Length: 351
Image (cartoon, rainbow, N blue to C red; front, side):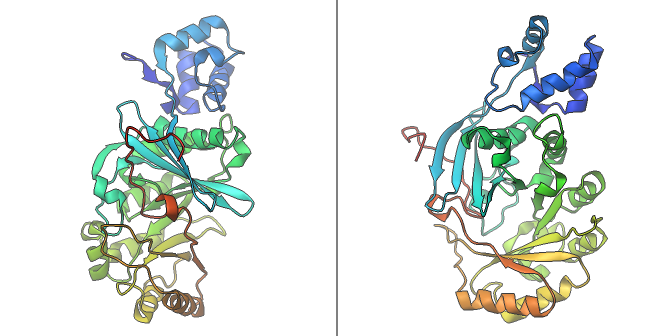
């Protein structure tokens, strides 16, 4: 591979400017970019409407990175978890979630995670490295190929996989531009959501530079409780985070999603619900309650149904829109907080 650049980490604008600089007509950049994000195009030779000399030039100057699944697991509820091995042998996981009438792809932004949340299995991997823009976006292309190659097979993209997206902001930002480019996969900003555990500088940049959805992994209504669950709160305190959310620029009819992992005996009491309703007062939010998925080695328990219903009722009575996330893929460790990329050498590629 040598020093060849990763062409799939170029935005459409960057690629067009590069080819113009090399003496090519402006439309060639759009042509090449379209090919880069066409399913099953894994070589420059497959870009059939490009002149041979341009294809040879691209082969000399660029590396066409690809991402292929090494293990695909299918849950009884239709959820698919795809493990991929990167060029440096690092492993990541991507999840395709079936919804009523459509599918959502849950994308990773890092190998492992440095945030150390006590309830999350991915945290046990530690942080290994950031993903490049191409490695982020290729997960979406891979999901489309897994579903037969039709772009329409995927409606929503959520950055809720392995890693903290806003700790890899520059690469995330380029990936967002690539995903939304009308010459490529052409995803609407309304169909993309970035989830964060509360990296305040990243939230501020995201609000200034992009108009995608924002989801906040809150998980506790007080700084003390949140610090116990999420070490990030010691750096970016809950009170400061709430202040940033109050100032966050939202388009009309858009709301911030508050993700709240409900853990038995930890944050599931009526008092917790009342406190959550108080701190969110005046912010345009919707609350997504996530019953904790029990994971071996993590000392927390799933909440009871009665606690979930009580929590929902209290928030609804305070005027909040509340949903309860139905756990999907738990039987293949693909549910919230369960991703942990580890493949045995003798495992079948499809489990």
